[in-house]
Length: 307
Image (tube, rainbow, N blue to C red; front, side, top):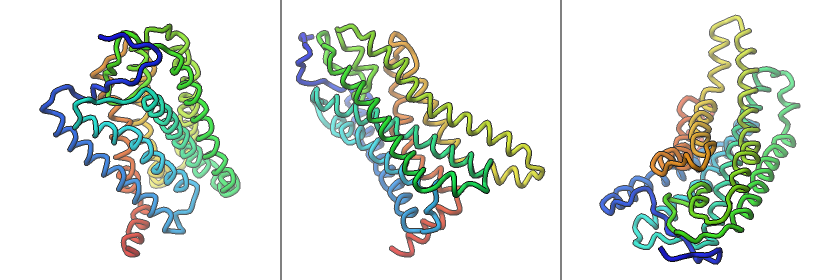
């Protein structure tokens, strides 16, 4: 390998598979998944905004989650699709840092929006008489702005730390995008600070919404168990089912990929786990939230009739 310093011009992304015969089939699969993500989340946004009965805090956060998911996958998938059909599979050094910045910022925004939705369900089930006051439009907007601000500040700090590293042994990233762990693996600088940030500050940024979700659902479970009728319990739990499914998919793969020492990083296993929360989960979200949701189904029917 040639030696590359901190003035490296760019990286080579190996992608999902190095097998040349798999490139076109993988391109087709991920193109279809990307289009489904765009259409599905786009329809959710349009359905919510076209039906005044869906102008509630829960659907406000859901529409923003769908928009964030569209942006989140767009940061990664188009470049991955180009590389699947390209022989060079090149990404510039600046392009890599930009991709890493928006990937982290949008991913963290996703987690904070999921926490906001958990708070909404907590108030709706545990304190329904004060729901309109607690989840007022102003507070919902503040939750959204806070989610975006914290996520972007965290991402900016991490990318600035990453930009100070030198890369000398190799410029080949064994991944399909510029993720933090595989890029750190290439550095010949001391990455202790970066790893400390991942295991402490990143832990705080990601664990805060996760603990908020956990606390909310513990409170919800305690409240629901006090409901005397089985039908009442089922009705209360059914309003949380979709959200809880998305949380399990998202956090399960995120915790597996990021909260381990760099020495335990596994290329193949981490690629699969990363595909789960970067591509599969955003694609499934519209289906999870609409299949058993009468309000969303009604909004989609109304949108179809208008079209």
